[in-house]
Figure 1 (cartoon, rainbow, N blue to C red):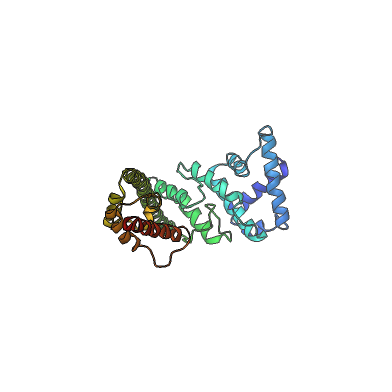
Figure 2: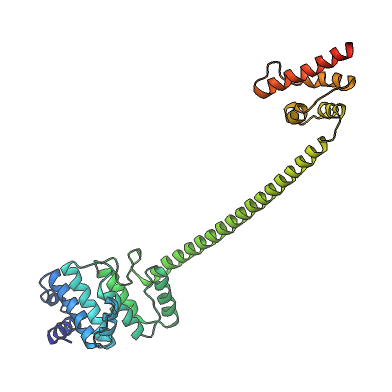
Length: 298
C-alpha cells in the first residue's frame, strides 16, 4: 500500500489512541482531499490483490485485515471524526465496512442487510457473547457521528443505545411479521376469490351449454307439431314471448277450424302496433284466419 496512505492511517489511529482528536482535523484540507484519500486506498488494495475488481466495501474489509482489533477500533473512531469535519456522509462511508469487520474480529455475527434484520443478528450475537468494546464503540458512533447511516449502513434507526436498539428492532421485526402474515392472508384470500371466479365461470359455461342444449331440444320438439298443437304450446308458454315462435308461426301454411280459433288468441299476444318483421307476420297470420273463414263460409 502507498506509504503516504499508510502513514496517514497510522496517524489517525495514533491520534485516537492518544485522545488527540483535534489533531485529526489537520490531516485533510477538505472533502475532496478526503475522497482522494479513500480512492487511493481503493486503488492500492486493488493492486495489492493483483488487479481484482473489488467492490468498494470489500476494499475496506481487506484493509481492516491489516490491523488488530484496537487499531481498527481507533481507525473507525478517527474516520468518524474526519467525516464530521469534512462533512462526508451517506451510505458509502468506509466506516460501515470497517465496523462490520471489527465485529467479525470480535467473534460476533452481523450482516449488513440494508435493513434492521442485520442489526437483529448483532443484538442476538451480543446476547450470547457480550462484548463491551463493541457496545461502547457502537454507542460512541451513534452519539458522535453526523452521518445517519453509521454504523449499520441504514438511515431508519432512531435509537442511540444497544438496549433501545434491541427494542426498536424487535418492534420492527414484529411489524414485519404482521405485514408478512397480512400479505399471506391477502394472497390466500385472492387465491380463494380467483378460485371462486373460476368455478363461477365454469358453472356459467356449463349452464350456458345446458341452456343451449335445452333450447335446441325445445326447438326440435316444435318441428313436427300440428298447427293446433303449436298454438296450444304457445298459449300455454308462460316464459317465452310470442315473438320466440316467429319462425314456427311464419311457416304455418294452412289451418283447420280449431287451430284458427287458437291462432286468434295467439295474435292477441302481439302488440297492437308492431314494426318490421313482426308487423308483417301479424298481418299474414290475420290473413290466414280471414282466408280460412272465407273458405269455410263458402
